[in-house]
Length: 115
Image 1 (cartoon, helix red, strand yellow):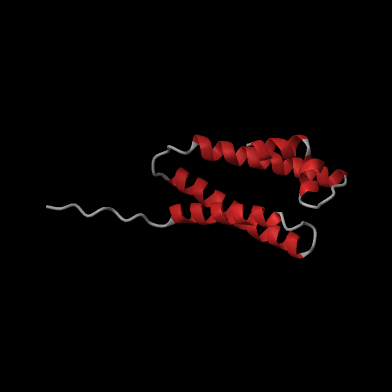
Image 2 (image 1 turned 45 degrees about the vertical axis):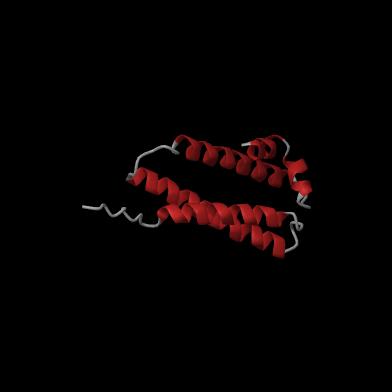
């Protein structure tokens, strides 16, 4: 939430930490990204206690895909030289979240009950 709000309000400052500079279009895109982070956080927070359902599965799938794409996009930016080494922390965070959400997409085994 803090990262999303900070990107929304001060995109040039946040991106400068990662070695990137933003023109007007980049500031717009960064603010859209900040809004996306806030929206995804709110979605995950308010759905955190939801019961097993098609809607919960769809939320988990969407967040898994979002974070997996974040890994790829951030890796491309690092390899292209657009971001500095600090961006590897962003890759690690995206990867952690993608794997975590992916885990919850796996079928859950029911415990065996003793008779």
